[in-house]
Amino acid sequence: MYRKEITRSHRVAFVIAIDQSSSMYQRLTFLSRQCTKAEAVSIVASRLIDELIARARRDDDVRNYYDVAVIGYSGDSVYSLLDGSEGFMPITLLAERRPEQKLFACECVLPSGEHRILTEKISMWVPPKAGGATPMYEMLLRVTEMVERWSAEPQNRESFPPVVFNITDGEATDATPAMVLRAAENLKAVATEEGNVLLVNIHLSSESEVEAMLFPQPGEIAKADEATRRMAEMSSPVPDEMCEVVRDFRADGSRPPYIMMGYNASITQAVAMLNIGSRTLIKQR
Image 1 (cartoon, rainbow, N blue to C red):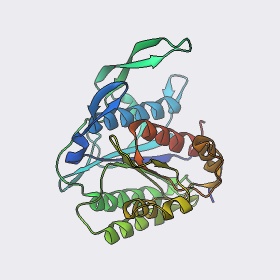
Image 2 (cartoon, rainbow, N blue to C red; image 1 turned 90 degrees about the horizontal axis):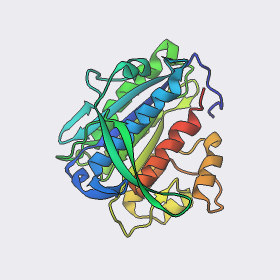
Image 3 (spheres, helix red, strand yellow; image 1 turned 90 degrees about the vertical axis):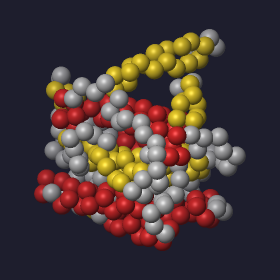
């Protein structure tokens, strides 16, 4: 059981793990423009970092509320996507950086029905990349080591457990499904005094005929294919305090329990899942 309130004295850890294998070079529509999955995920992750910095800002000062790690995996390597950091970086140090900013144009529809092109300036914290195989097993081992060290630090023992987002469009190429599942179970077994690590798996699609599954129920998973069932087994259950938000998000009259995963999710749905996971569990201070 997770407490619903988190005190200001306790930091929260976020890990964003990004599949950067060759399939992430596939193109999709995002912000009303064509781009690769790698570019879209780069924008999504960068936006989340900017939002965490904004949430930690108080009176023109940034408080040390969050530790952030962004991990890429492709080929036979697992690596940090935040220059100069091999693990977690305090949000205060991130806020001191000045990453390259790019303008992106997107189309929006006004209440009047008029279409208008708006520009948005985005800090490019995460460089897009696509190439090689998908070493998801090695990524899970690396992230487990990171969150074990973080959770063992005395100042973090009473913190909300780390939240890990794994954004991928494929399956592991470096281990059997059974090995990957065991690695995911070991990751979810890491805990602070507030509970176990939360693993959110988000599978991206381009244009797929398979119906998307977002925060599915166990009964829905039982009817799915083997790959979807494996992803569900890897994922954490939705905590009680998040269930009402998930039920509203699904808007289908369903009731918990739910699973913290998205399968065949579009990039827009991935954005929604990241927002729900980061905003609902870690309330604004």
